[in-house]
Length: 146
Image 1 (cartoon, helix red, strand yellow):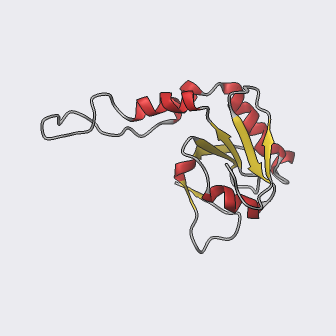
Image 2 (cartoon, one colour; image 1 turned 90 degrees about the horizontal axis):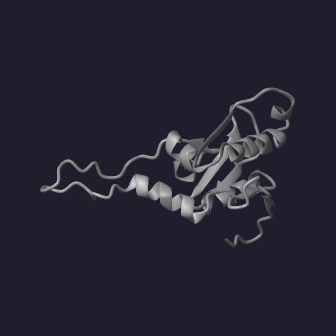
């Protein structure tokens, strides 16, 4: 994707099918959050300042998740009340298509790019890009994951 005046940093992943990227600072993170893709996952050190790192899933894996999300029987209708409609993807759904080593790489990258977090044991949180929210009153570089 093309973003004006953004210096996106790309990283190699242990699995070359995935794209890993982050902005160089909180201002560039603002532009990235405004231009993410549905197949992106966002990683961050929990409760500490850290880099906002994104994992872009390859389209074939994203399509596997879409099959789980949109049931083959379709959406509920008057004739088909049993159909459940769109399924919310779970952590297990993502973990079924993303190798554990990729999650480990992402955790290491966000921990290594946290001034405080690189010195202590941390928890790393992640969420699909669609769950990120940016309120107008939130300071630059901050996001809320729902």
